[in-house]
Image (tube, rainbow, N blue to C red; front, side, top):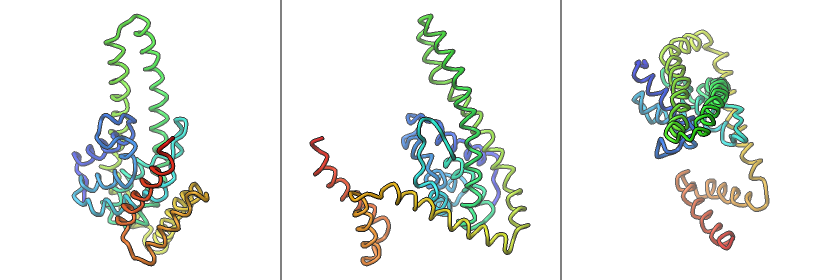
Length: 250
């Protein structure tokens, strides 16, 4: 599989929509699009294999299950990991375990884009202060709405598109050079990283009020062999009833 120039641009736009922080640009919202499961599936659609894109995106999503951005800090970028990780994994033909090991360092590189974004946006705030002091409402709205988005579009779409377009051959050559035991090591590491994400989720819900629901889900999965979609729907129903009974008055 090869990535055309147009496909590379579309992959860059997918990343931009996930990192822009402006939900009104899409129906899903940037928080949802930033999840590797979602952006990986969209990359799969662009590359003509949405099913494999969803599978790879789901695998990459597992280490980031407990991801949260607090106070504007971004320790990793799951959106970049899911977008570029899925694209490079699809064109390289690797399995989801190897895709996870490829995606994690990519997610760390995504913090560079975020830092540049937040740093330059400060200058736009100073521009807003100046036009606000003059009572220029039209320019105030224009600067506030469009300048940061144009800048973010440039620093997100262009590098991601270039990496997707030129990086596929590099990844294929790298994987060919480490075939055998080194590649097997990457597969093992990729199998461990999702367990880390699940462990972080278990730690966050480790309380007497929530662990009982986790135990209930495990029992339903093991003894009733319910598929994950049925478990998700059942969990939503239980959560809705629980919140209505105990939190409605508050």
